[in-house]
Length: 72
Image 1 (cartoon, rainbow, N blue to C red):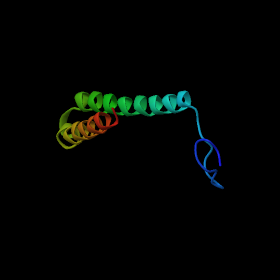
Image 2 (spheres, helix red, strand yellow; image 1 turned 45 degrees about the horizontal axis):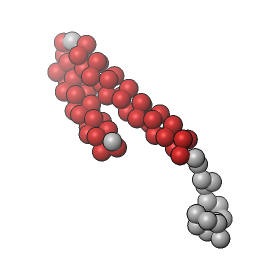
Image 3 (cartoon, helix red, strand yellow; image 1 turned 60 degrees about the horizontal axis):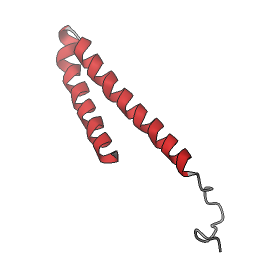
C-alpha cells in the first residue's frame, strides 16, 4: 500500500499540483474566451440577425459566467 492510498489497476496516474493548476488555468482561460466571444459577437450583430441571435448569445455568456463563478 502506498503512502497516499492503495494502487488501483487501470487508474490514471497522479499528477503534480503544478500540472493540475496549469490544466485548471487552461480550462478557465477557455471559459473566459467563450464569454468574451459571445459578448463581442452579440454586440456586432445587426438587423434581423440581432433580434434572433443577440439575446441567445447574451444568455449563453451569462451561463458561462455563472459556471466560472462556481469554479472559483
